[in-house]
Image 1 (cartoon, helix red, strand yellow):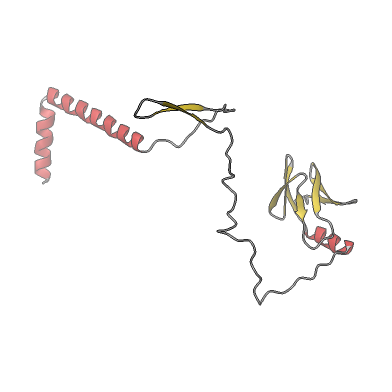
Image 2 (cartoon, rainbow, N blue to C red):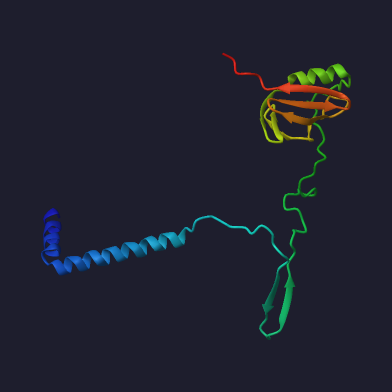
Length: 176
């Protein structure tokens, strides 16, 4: 097999014209092959215009009558809403769950705030106990008389308030 390959290579390279034609055809073939690969797997990019006006499209039917179609600028239905018939939210508790006694005192609220840990601040958002919370959103609802809201962010600290009570969380300095 090795001798046959050597003989074929010698025949191919013996004539300069034939070898240059072979190289040219090989190059064109590789270009076409690469083009097929690029067409088969186009890059996944999209460019969106900043504002889309109401679009009007015309559909031409087989009897040559034009039917105008008006497209909405906003979707009529929220694609992320959950169907309550397919996924009911009223789930009864199992027999092995413990009932939680809700302590609605201010002391319970202070103990809950003590468990919160401020991890990061970026712009108008903060990461508290692994959750990203925007300014004005509720941090904790359960086990407190009033929901704790993130009211303000500044530098390395945030203010959490419930009615007229305010609590400040700070990012701990790095330990040495």
